[in-house]
Amino acid sequence: MADTYRSVQLSQMGEGRFKAVNRRGGVLPISSGEDPDFSPVELLLAAIAGCTALDVAHITGKRAEPESFSLRCSGDKIRDELGNRMVNLTVTLDIAFPEGEAGDAARAVLPRTIEQTRDRLCTVSRTVAVESPVTMEQGRLDG
Image 1: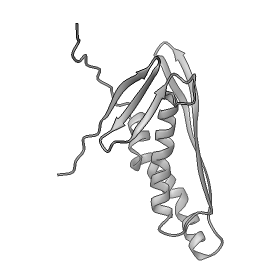
Image 2 (image 1 turned 60 degrees about the horizontal axis):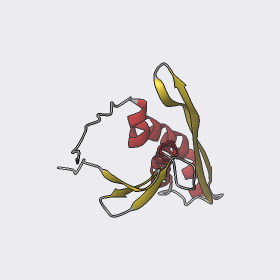
Image 3 (image 1 turned 30 degrees about the vertical axis):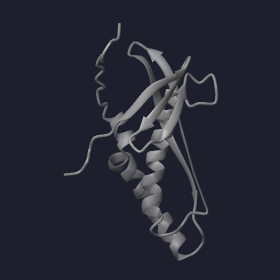
Image 4 (image 1 turned 135 degrees about the vertical axis):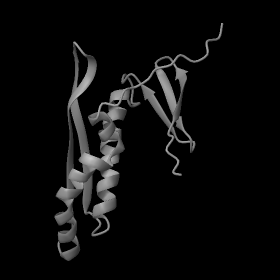
């Protein structure tokens, strides 16, 4: 059976600063956005773009290596009757493939690949799109 469980551990590093640590030992600083660290919203945007980039690179890369490959994920942070949230989430892909048969093959699969990552492959954007509920539980309290 596949290992489906994913987790990160978050601990405080200082006032308004935390670090996320994954099971492989990777560390990512997080803050409110008052310093160079990524804010939680920026991490969400990066996760959507990153997931999309990995899917697109994997599929198109079988045909040709891109000459350039960049993505931008953006949206509007709003507050309304539903609370704080992001709307108008958009991923913009800027990819250039080389001239020739391999580049033509990569360009040919790109539109379908973008559809597949949006509609089925990207776990991050799919989770946002299907509105997966988040459960919050209180752990131990010292004192």
